[in-house]
Image (cartoon, rainbow, N blue to C red; front, side, top):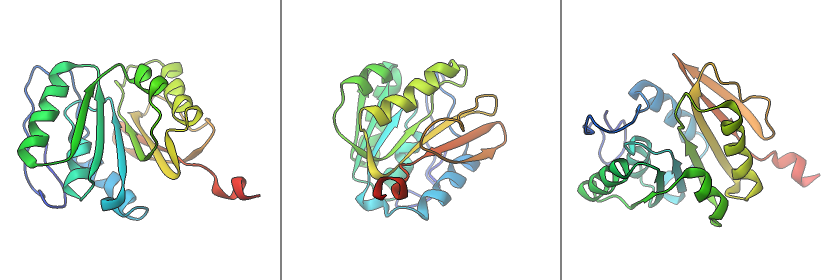
Length: 185
């Protein structure tokens, strides 16, 4: 995996083979960040990366100037790898070992972008619970964006706050936002 753009553009990151991960492909990551470039100024963002695995997405945000990034993963090996890599790159990334659902239940801060890349085999109802928890617990800023990466076999476009989705091979990014027009009426 490599960093696509920003301060560390082109740098390769090699994760240990024993981590239980499926990193977002470079092609998908580049497409995702092309979309985000049109919506946000990265230096001002507060990011939450759920099921962060190797930290691939967080490094990309950090390379592009994000100063406030939090990674949540249930695997201690992943958390340790993220901490080590963030230190090497001098990125302001906080990595926390936690069950994502328990973290979302208890956490009270809000974020500009929440990115989640759960295991593709996770049950449909768990994907739905994740999205519901983010909005019910007010973890997303009003003008923020929730992005879920999932397989093409998981359908999430029927849920409240759905905005749009983009397909890249076997992967799909589904985007959720508050409907600001609805809230101002």
